[in-house]
Every structure is written in structure tokens, then in C-alpha cells.
Amino acid sequence: MKLKRTLIKNANIVNEGKVFSGDILIEGEFIKQIDTSISAKSADVAIIDAEGKYVLPGAIDDQVHFREPGLTHKATIETESRAALAGGITSFIEMPNTNPQTTTVEKLEEKFEIAAKTSSANYSFMFGGTNDNLDEILKVDETSVAGLKLFLGSSTGNMLVDDPKVLEKIFQNTNMVISVHCEDEATIRKNLKAHIEKFGDDIPIEKHPIIRSEEACYLSSSTAIALAKKTGARLHVFHLSTGKETNLFTNKIPLKDKKITAEVCIHHLWFSDEDYKTKGTNIKWNPAVKTKTDREQLWEALLDDRIDVIATDHAPHTIEEKKNVYTKAPSGGPLVQHALPAMLEKHHEGKISIEKIVEKMCHNPAILFQVERRGYIKEGYYADLVLVDLNNPWTVKKDNILYKCGWSPFEGTTFKSRITHTILNGSLVYHNFKFSEVKAAKRLTFNR
Image (tube, rainbow, N blue to C red; front, side, top):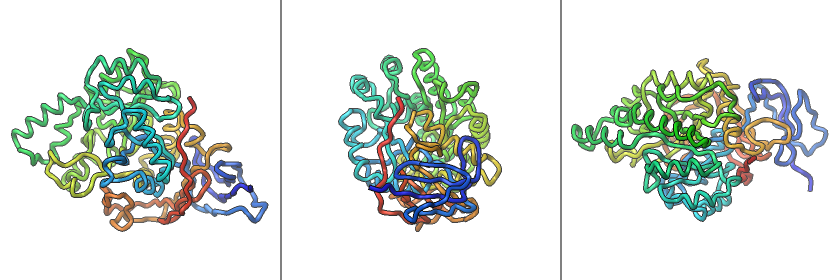
């Protein structure tokens, strides 16, 4: 059987800190050749003219909540993975706080089965830790799953790991990357109680970053880091939201040698507490969006490599749920479709280079989680590629939002850059707001 072949011509290729003009030949699922000029020697080669466009590796989002199983009125793996492709995210790692939670090997495998049938993008999952499932954690095949997720604050169900002895045992007994949500629950409860006494349930949304405070974040993340240093565990701290926390991380060693790494999410780089006035609970996240100063310090740490990864923490809720009073409005929002366009907007503003965006959204997640043959534009790697037109503006509107929940915190925003093509494992799966019916998604594999 003849392998399908695609030739991308005249591209501005962004890879490993460089932008260079060239062509990319794809054969089957893989990148066969990259050169300054490749000629199509036979008629069976599909040609994509990328004149004026940039070709990036497909982004790898290391933190999403696609709500399946159990919360599918908000989202499904099928709907959100399509939205991800439209946003240039070709691979995702999904979190364990579904219903039922992914805290047994059996439930993990059930999720993989759902994704194998319905996902439009490449997929893997985090296994969830609890106060009482160490036996299950030890059963997990570390080569077949992205890593371990621990909620050290702000969890649903029984996923809050707040027993210090259990925590230390987990840190001592796994080689997996341990990804953590760090907010100190006792601090938050105390702050929330004081605010409920003053306002009742209808607490002004502007108080969210005071309730889920800098102190709550720093106390939790510094404790987790101290434990990782004590046990030698491989720790990844999700969604930093404060400037103070950035000082806990280093840029003195290459990412591949780091034992303690950090991530920042789109919303903490884009919004500040000033936006609560207009956006209300639509930008209620945990950890909270904080001050302009925090945002500037997060940018500084991202650009000087103390922060390693940009992710989304995509976590949709229905708009009806979000419209509730403060104590009943859930935290989280949908982001996968708009994350890369938002970062490219910051590139237009002169805040970040396109090479740095690729490093933080493509290369570094691949290094950090040891994702096999993805995250780069290299011969022999899977052809997960995104074509971007940097000068083709479009506005986020209800009719072009692809999330099942049907809304976005970016509604009304005009982005200068447009994702025109997404290629997944060698197949063109998305082109100018239209999807092909090709099923090309694969389960992520890991070099461990």
C-alpha cells in the first residue's frame, strides 16, 4: 500500500529557537524530509502552499479537563478535542477529577477506551492520587500514562491529598512526574468564612483573589517543593498565579535536568484582577487571576525560563452554572481553541517571540513528559503541524466557538492571527474552520 504524501511548500518553519524558510515532506504519519526546496516528483503528492504562513509543531497542552465521564453536559472528549485542533493543539493530557474519578487503573483504562473511539486529537491522561490509593498508584504502568496528578488544595470529591504522611509516601514511591495544584485549603477556608460572614453567598467576584490568596498559593507550592527536594521526586507545579511563587524556581539548569518545574496558564498571562469588573465569574479560576504586578512577574519568569510551560487548564462549565452567585459559581473556563491565538496576539504586542511560544507550548511539554517523537518539526517525528497566518484577523463570536458549553472568556476579542491548517499524524484534519472526517488521533507514548 502506497503511503499518503503531503508537501508543504514555502513555509516559515519555527523550530528549536529558529525561523527558517523551507519545505516539509510528510509521508504517512511522519515527517520524511525538511529542506530549503523539495520538488514534488510524482502526481500523488498533495501540495499545501504555505507562502507567507508560519508552520509550528502542534501544541501539547499538559493540563485540560474534558469532563468525560460523568460531567458531559459541560463537555466531552469528542467536542473539546475538536476545539483543540482548531486552536492548534494536537495533543492533550487530561485530568483525573471526572466522575467517577480516575483513581484506579480500571477507570484509567475506561477513559483511554473513550478517547480511542472519540478523540480528534492525540491523548493521554493523568492518574489521580488520593489519601488512600497508594496501592493503585503503584500498579500504574509509568510508560503508558502521562503522569500523576495531586490536588493539594481545591479539589472535588475525595481528591484532596491533605495527609502529610500519605503525601510523603507518594513522593517517595513513584518515578512519574507528579503534577500538583497548589493552594492551601486551610487558608482558603478561613478567608472564605470571613467573607461569607460579611457578604453571605453573594461575595463580590473581586474578592476571589483575596480569598484564594497569594499566601494560600505560596504556602502550598513552597511546601510541595520542599517535599520534592527532600524525597528526590520529580515535581511539576501547575498554573502558577503569583509573582512570589516564581522565585521558588530556577533557570540555572536545562529543562531535561530539572527535577522541579513550573507551568503558567493563558488566563494568568492575559487577565488581571481589573478584568473582574467586566468579565465577572467568567474569569473565576482556581488559582485566581491576581494583580497586574503578579501578571508582569509571571511574564518575566516565563521569558527568563524559571517557568517552563504554557498550558490552558481548559475547564468548561455551562454559562448557567457560571452565572450563579460567588459561592455557587464553579471555577474554570474553556480555553483550548483560543490559547495559541492569544499567545500570538502577545507576539504582535512585542511581548514574546514566536520561537519562545513554540518552546513553551510545544518543545517543553514534550521534554517534560518525555513524549515520544512529538513537539518538534524534525525528520522521523510524527507530522503534527500547525499553519498560522499572522495577518488574518478574526473575532471570537458565539457562532465560531466550538466548545460544547458555547461561550468563551475571549468573546468579542479580535485576534490578528488565524490557524489555517492543522495536520495530525500526517493527515489534514482542520482547514479554515472546517474539519475533515479523517480519524487520525493516537494515544501518546513516552520515552521512559
